[in-house]
Image 1 (cartoon, helix red, strand yellow):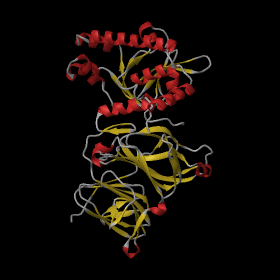
Image 2 (image 1 turned 45 degrees about the vertical axis):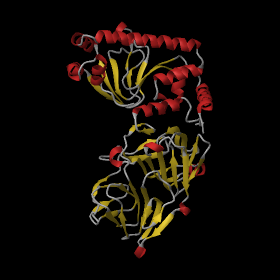
Image 3 (image 1 turned 180 degrees about the vertical axis):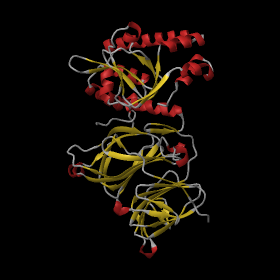
Image 4 (image 1 turned 30 degrees about the vertical axis):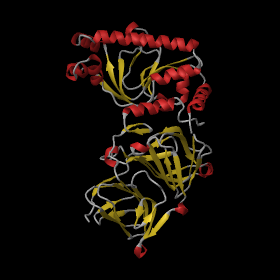
Length: 197
Length: 292
């Protein structure tokens, strides 16, 4: 998707002018990271939240057999972090890795304090974001427990409209908790229903 | 008539791989002063300069991907490409052939080095061009024009200077076989050393020259070395090229559509909403299905 900068994102969502968030954003570090580089590895301590201005990150775990399980993708305009280490001072449970060359902004506790102090409705917005995140995670658990592969897939493309064109299908299958062959079957069935020559 | 001058000559930018089978220099839209608006209706030009692919049992190429809203034109100079699409179409593009695919409302396709060619390997050289479609034609039915080299109309230049293959549009009264949705001239100009060719296109037609083989001089002043691309200014109608070695130059000239462009990845539409619909349709199987 299009590049999104944090300044515009905050101004739009907090209903303030960009100048009001300029000082806060200037405090943050912007990093260019190469495809495949890690922001956090399992077992390390993560000290930042990350906002994706351009590119694509993915968060995943690796099981005992060495298989990857994708927890989430973070394309442009998404926040991502390892809550274990940032908020509970425990080693990170997940890897966070760039799948494309990316531009990200590092967010730390100073950022949180500064923005809470300067922008009166930030805490309300942040809480809403957190509720939305929890709502999404619950729905994800529910779908993993109860939904068909097609339902999971349709929910996925609503949430991530362009990811299917950015990552291999094996990664999408991993996110959905289904075999790559099942994803192919779902896509084939949908084409059978919806494709008009 | 006024002379058309050279706006700039661009070196081939750092190459990157599209899939594992195409090693391309992107001139349009990432080249300096070559964004989609400036180059309209030519919205993408990838040039695979001559590159040796070693023999490979597994054909290299690009897996299944969609297109909507424009046409893809593949001009094969060296090597062979096999392609398949979600409507059951497919074929082989051989040396000297042109494949003009109107993706329009949407196709899923894949392109690989042709199997036998891949087994032997060899020099590979191609141009892939995206030509934008007018708003009214973006959702028309997809189609192919497979133009075999032997069927291309040719003009023999005077004084044994060489020949011009007219792919689309017109050159000195000879028309190209390809049908287009907006006025476009597409010529492969094959000059012998010292051979000269003159061109005349309306000044507002956006025009580029790519030196595929050899070197030429434009308007007796500007050198165009091998693999370089000349962007012509829109300040006149007439220009000439003269070959300093035997040379092949791809000449493209098209009338700008002057319509809004909303582009993302493999979709080029007029509005953001239409892009959202394109992703939605792709995700929901409306482009069909094609096995990787």
